[in-house]
Length: 191
Image (tube, rainbow, N blue to C red; front, side, top):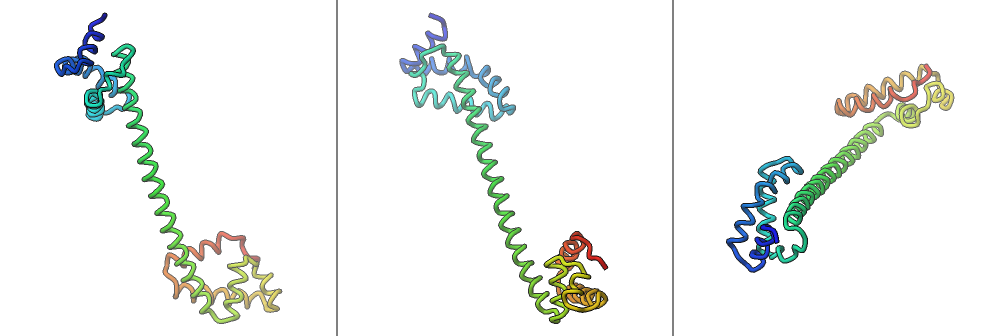
């Protein structure tokens, strides 16, 4: 029988001295191995120490039926991989929570902005509001609105100018800029 096998047999008998000897024999090699997996010396030391505590307190040595060295290295590798998996899950959960929170906040903010915008549009004079809604909300071209309402294209331009002037006064600069950007990036009205 080899030396590791003899040491394991003595550990299985409950010898603390044999356990300490086993610890000192394999600790450094197991830490180096763990560092090669997780790239953090302090964490590797913690994981190997945790393994040895568990190995002794839960009598994991009784389940060693193969080569002791293989068992120790495989167990430390599994501890490292479990740690990495747990960290990734935690980070994903935090990331999902953060993304979800940001999405909810964005939706609330967008809903509040829409409400403010619709209130400002509803305060426009009737003809001005009607022309603005057809041009900005429905995306009709100035000429289409003029034909639909049986007014001149200059009337549509004038009413749109008044609508934008009124909305600029009643909306925050950022909300007005967003509205203007949305209008400008739509298909240009034929004037």
